[in-house]
Image (cartoon, rainbow, N blue to C red; front, side, top):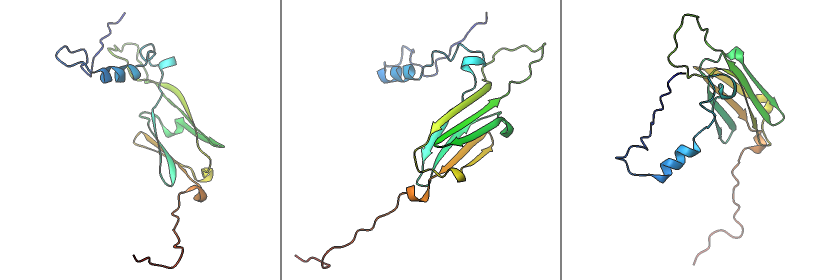
Length: 160
């Protein structure tokens, strides 16, 4: 069995540092108990993280997908459900290769997002450039915020 080396990036176990309960909570909340079970396949396979933001005109989804080819991606919009799925292929392993670490993840992934009412599904745009996927789902014009002008009621200026 291989020796596992666990690196502590935050240095929270360093006795010379003061105890910070918030740092402990951040470490616990971010801890994934299943992350170290996989070998890059199966349960702990490749699952990209997405940034999702709303602008005044659209909803924008961004994900880092290094090593994923455009032909290995599938995007679909069914009603208000956006589904993004794909696959990152594992590198070919030669029989005489000697591996010291095998940490990158491979395999299939699928993510689904439920969008609010008022999206313009006919004008969704997606592009994959330099390993970054960007999907823009525009809002219908009637759903975009618009400025409402105030009417002055009565007779003009009031003087005291």
